Length: 411
Image (cartoon, rainbow, N blue to C red):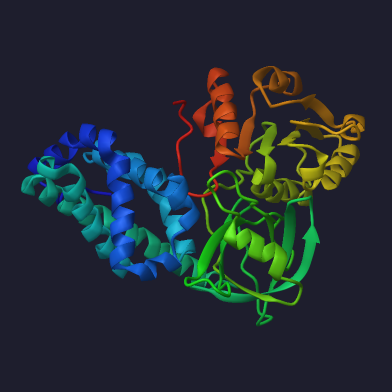
């Protein structure tokens, strides 16, 4: 990812704006989204409006811009971030012609929020830097589109899938088993990847797209997504798409989806124990990994730790409990925040409350392991901090954010 086409002066100007972006980055990106949607309302068919309201999308963009400015001399340092975002863009079917729209509105937002601090020289430097970075994304995503469409059973953009089976997993979580409507081959995927589902909801002006992890092992002739019905919380309304899927999509209905994507995937090589730690519906990508290991008869020690409110909200417990009872190399432990009397009889429930370091220490007798975790952001920050305190090497720590990529650094 060469920045040779940028002059030294341009790089210096961009790097000099790092403190300004650190202070005003989120204000700039919030204004950017508002401005862009006002001028290009068709993009509301792509972006998740809930993440806009939560501030997660603007914060994710601000983090990306900040990282690009900070590493403008060596953009190779942010390649993992580029790859992660490019996977999401490919899954959402982002097109090259949409990048100039983003650039135009981003520069205008910088001028309108920063005022005199956004001089002509600063904006011109950022225009050059943005065009270079956008071209990198376009080229990376072009390769991803080609790989997705040219792989056996693969396709480009959206493909129609029939809901073959709909299965309730808990009070708020339901699985959907999907098969291609055309009856043709189905592309494989890496355990941990996700697909994008596009729905047109009666009465809604725009289409809605959501990304859901594939929750079963590949090569089974179907894709399975496991969706939590978001009931709303405080100022946030109930999840538009998740409630629509739960209430209005039934067996025999058709969904439009994109080919699997994502870089949070199972690393199968090695002999170290594998530790899965999930919270709530964060169990979904880890189930794909777990089922793959079981399907392939892996003999490595596998430890699965799951946190839920209680058994009422706990998806896929029976499958995990049965597997752990039958496989000597599989260990399973549950932490319930508010267990019911029945939950206290569950032999796999090992803790009441929240996962903490002492609990993990009691379960994990060997910290020399590969760790995979996924769940709500506060949960993930706790796990990340524990692993950092244990000096677990970075290459042995793997995690996935639902929604826009964020940071697990303690605030």
